[in-house]
Image (cartoon, rainbow, N blue to C red):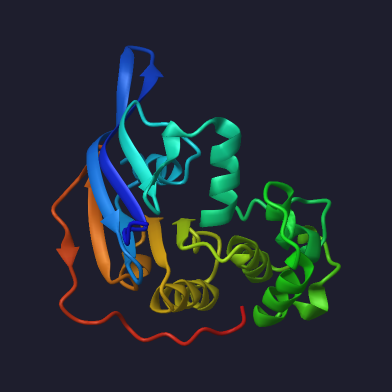
Length: 238
């Protein structure tokens, strides 16, 4: 198996507009290895969220290839890609995307609907305790704070021990303290051997990554490789 966790090659994506095609991503290539924490930064509309969705097997590019752990995502049949995505990719979104009528435990267990696991409940309970949500086990999302919702989403993303986490503006609905805690958990995941792709318009969030890629008008500008380690943040409960 390839040591590369995520490989994007010449990704192009267009959308239909009133006056014809509108370019969202224009020829972006990117590679992530274990322990990489890469931020894609740019203004709203620059194509960074489209790039992340394509990276996660949720939005097929018009051209180019997306490989995760050496597997071409869009060469797979839809059902196979869904199972592979559940096993190999974790997602953390700004809007949390928790299922409103399920409690914390069942939200964390939601990935097992696509990919059952024999010890899923044990693993979910361990993650819920790890993120300080044991006392919220049977609360639905509406009864949680925004920080607690994002912690539940992080636990869900980690259920299958994926090698890759994709985070789309994960601090956008959080205050600074909760946002820093989310970024600390992402950095901890990368330090332990995972790979993180974070997309954000916020330079304060991007500074916690070890590498930043700037996007403008669907294109990636030359990498800004950090010369010093990111600011140390200790993971904490939100």
